[in-house]
Length: 370
Image (cartoon, rainbow, N blue to C red; front, side):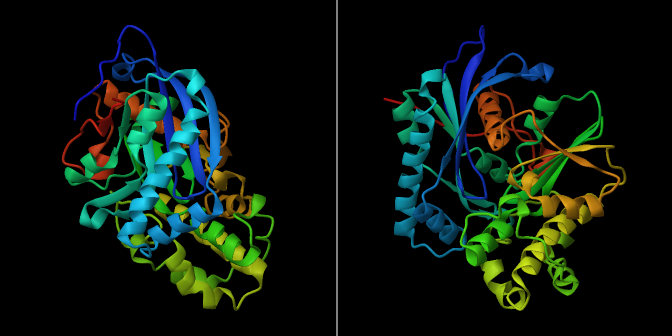
């Protein structure tokens, strides 16, 4: 795993590319990083630009099919190339910022932590050629090789961004919901269950739109019997370290539950799915003996009014306020750029206590332009 030769006497300009479990597109950011700031815990200097590059509907469909294990190897091979081209196109929109290097997440299509395996698709060499700079990619598999879950990897970046002066909780409501907590002494984090994945799939299925804007259609009554049965899912019986994805809470799950949901009015279906995400978060946070006084929420679910309402009713002692430090969609891409910068500086990017890895390690592999 060769490292690029990077200057240590000036800030780095790093481009980060993130495609989350929502599978709606690529978020690209450019940030400034102090390479000597990692050891002091504050390497982030600021962000310069952010763009969201949406997936065409056909590409989104094939990503969801891949996550549902419905694509042939030949189709996965082609999807890898197409996702690489789209990431390169998204990055090219920010090329005027002249990044020193880029960090590519790729699109997760399979995450099997019980088997020590994960798969993110997007060809890094297309990105290296388009930007004419090094690209660090495939950050999760080193952690998995060391026995970890390969996720979540954002806890260190949350600490670098938020600091350690006081306790805090950070909830990301992406396709899958994850939480990071700093209690003043240590960081804890894990995937807490479905965030927006099921709600977005339901919007496509029953509303014919990519997502329910603001939760406008989720105005019905929660069906308690369904909610109780869903909370018996084996994932909620596991203890951290743990992580999950669309393999557990995706298209196959919704297809299985569709007959029960379709017996309800549409508004009740969406309200019950919103309550499922909120109940999962609340029960998972119930593992903690003590919660911070306040928390910050980010991701697409931060704008879903019914989900926020259901969450507030279940966690009255922990009010979540929207994280407005960065544009919507930018935070995870910023986190990924920071993880790439850590790799460039030779700094470990995982937290073994969070992922279950045997030790901390520098993450990722590097692709270089010719």
